[in-house]
Length: 354
Image (cartoon, rainbow, N blue to C red; front, side, top):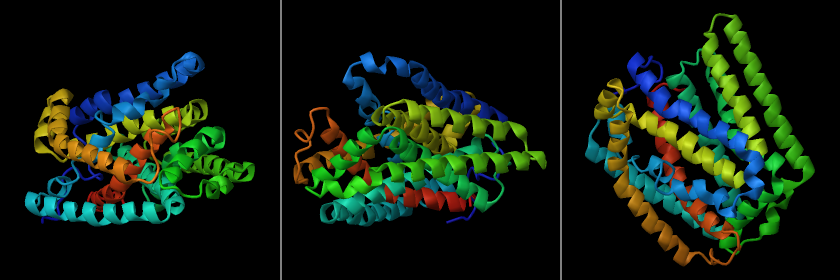
């Protein structure tokens, strides 16, 4: 394969492409999160189904499909062989995903904790790429500063709900373990007031450090606007996860923030999509993505159905409020996430994120 990557993060995006992505991806994510915050006082009178709606939508809209083009990503990233890319990623999913699925059956408590940590790292790496590629974040020039940004950004959807909504958070995580008849009480130490204070306070302190170091970089000559966008997003996300119930907040974030931004990244390594973005036609680019993602999205749904048949617990009876079904879906997502993170980490290296 060639070592020259398409859409390296170190290069500035063409103005037309940047404007199209801003209108189709970045701003809509702000609007979705901001609107949810503004509407949060109404949540108490809305049907419970609204809480689960973003996760239900994520099955077909952005969420689950955003990883369904992994088999094409290596070849498109470095102008390589599509066949080799498909074979390598298929083997990766079979081995890594299969091993992680076995882990869930053998030790569901540690598998659940690993899922939270894995998601923390992955959602953080997604936001670091977006900051560098979409807004030219000059205030993140070093690996250390990018690593801090990764910890903060990924920690917000994983830690802030724990600090502000421990009961709801615990119910979902316990659902993971209950699916496999595991000892749900083993998770209780993570939900003590002391643990929540350390986790939430530590993340807040690191957020302030990241914002302060970025301000120092701006004082030294880095562009001010990208730093302001970064800090503004951090403030918005803190309020978002502190205000909304975790299931609703994480579901919205997964679908309208993380997945949508990763899809934008994938559009930038597809020549046909880049042409459409250059013409200001985001809809055509997204249709190309949907076409590419449809086959493996369908395969994933079949796999989820198989998972429902083999888990020891019955997801339809674990909880009356659909927590069991959500747990089943998220365990399926977890199994797919591990190989997906490997692919994205490889893309990060090739495109110069680290």
